[in-house]
Image 1 (cartoon, helix red, strand yellow):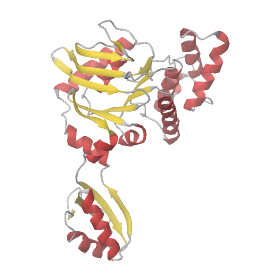
Image 2 (cartoon, rainbow, N blue to C red):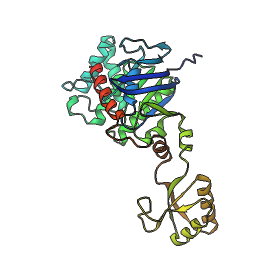
Image 3 (cartoon, one colour):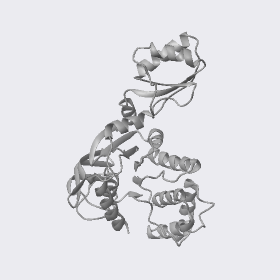
Image 4 (tube, one colour):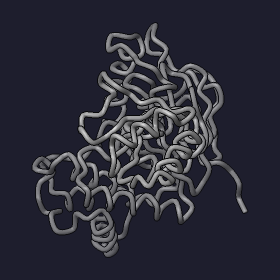
Length: 334
């Protein structure tokens, strides 16, 4: 069995003028995995995705895509498909016409084009609306059409920049199903997202970038475990009694006021590590207080993300680098 990783990057650097967009980035993505790439605006996500798509080349370090080293010449590696900053399709053509043209460029025989196009349109849930012109499509529909275009290449590595942008629940379901099928069939998927629910639902591993550097890379479960102590919203059958129990539970603090406090009169916000929360639930049950709701105020993945990345000012060098990088990649994609 071939154990060659789909992506292997070591010490990748990328500069835009005097601003460092990527600073010694390592990345490993195995075949058959969905790998999430996240970070604040300006962290370097789009720059890194552009390198994987051949829209730019690294200034330093080594990058291998599907077992082949990436050189210093701009070229889309064989077996790689995807998009950054939205799919580059023709707004004056219909969705179906766009895909038929792409199928022709990809070398599909005339008799196979329609069948392949209809298959990918059906997969992304656009078969019934594909005769509308691209310019009339919503953001979510354009994202799904871009995914359909990428599927025509039958990629071994799929690279997607914010594929969940603009998707309604039905669109999200179609996209998730397609990405999971690709991974099940052995393809690797690398996607950027600001939505932690997407990461939890799709990704087995995640890499977090902050100011061009990797601050975490590993399993999603490990990231969630690093969230530490959280605020939890607690709704019970006896709020006053629940407050008394919470205040006497070791490791638990009741958040009394401020933006973190509960706005619902019958709810409490408590703070503590998971073992202390488990003990609180046990004590409430012993006191015959029914727990109707217990959930993190901020999801564990999001809490870990915020703790690892901190805040980046909108005027930071990294944010300015992101704007420069986006312009360069947009030009390369045309």
